[in-house]
Amino acid sequence: MIDVHCHFDMFPNPLSIVKEIEDRKIVVIGMTNLPSHFEMGHPHIGRCKYARLALGLHPLMAEEHLQERTRFARLIDRTSYVGEVGLDFSMEGIETKSIQIDSFRFVLECVQIRKKILSIHSRKAEREVLHLLSEYKIVNAIFHWYSGSLEILDDIIRAGYYFSVNPSMIANPKGKRIIEKIPVDRILTESDAPYAMHRNKATVPSDVRYVIDFLSHIHKLDVRSMENQIRKNFDVLLQRIK
Image 1: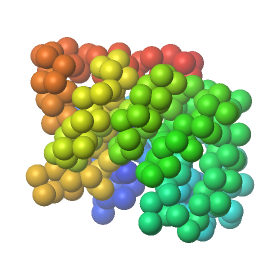
Image 2: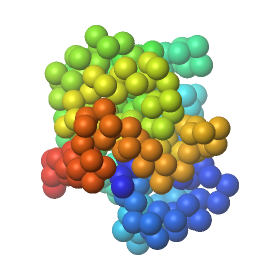
Image 3: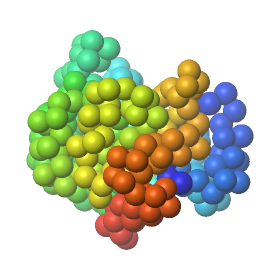
Image 4: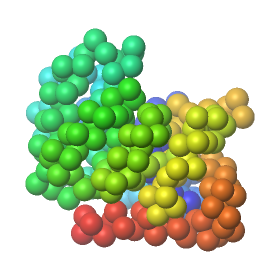
């Protein structure tokens, strides 16, 4: 199984989650919200085979971005993964819109000359995120928990980007409509643990199996074939950063 968007550093005992990831051989990309969080966590996953850590600058933590940007630039070459980054123009984030845009441009400038895989937050800012990714000619981007319009979804697909789907999306009518529009060769699985919910419980990385079951049903594939397709999709992104 592959979980391209998880926050294992936000569990009460992150090391126990990392141990479970390694024991179950689940490839998990751990997001961080700030570079200082990445710096604290990186030594603990350095020898892991399946758990990997991404360098993040979360849009909802924009008020801390200015003091974190120097650290971001210093740490960028320690990982192949960047996330969680992006924009959030919802009621929760709209007050820091200008800081977010400035920070996201900073991230894209850092990434532009490097080979990285980005996990993108785009709530209520899907069009702006797509425009900036295109402006900076970013190739390897995954739209995490996409919740925008189907029209913009089509534009993102035409631009060549990927989408990661979590258990909360498969339990939501709009989420299902979005998933059904994503081509099978552009879809990846995520848990967004511990923030997403499944059956009234916070998700864990192994819950991506429920997403795989759902995808196998809508694409009329057996579970093993669906798993292989997701692996193939992820491998395309990995090949681009070699």
